[in-house]
Length: 115
Image (cartoon, rainbow, N blue to C red; front, side, top):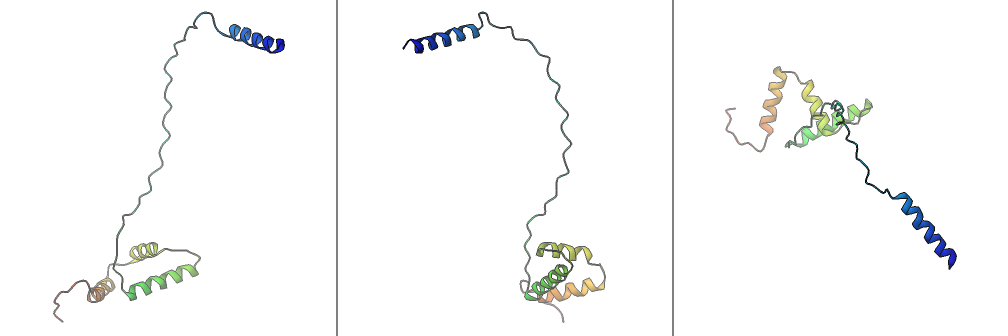
């Protein structure tokens, strides 16, 4: 038991020596200068959700473009295909013709057209 008491006494003496007798003075530090924030990378723009009504012919065309791009080593999504086709479209008589064809096939609109 005496060795246990000796260890306790030695530990208590070590703690007393480690404790400061007077409170330490806290040094006032100059305010640290804030580092310049790192320049932010430009935010990537995200598109918004848009829903399209596609008929079977439209879906077939998207698959055809997808197959062509896959043959070129690309892995396109339907959204990327539509965006690419929009960017490659020209505003000419072909666009007007395609619009009129699509308008006639659109089953959601019932307009009376003079044929």
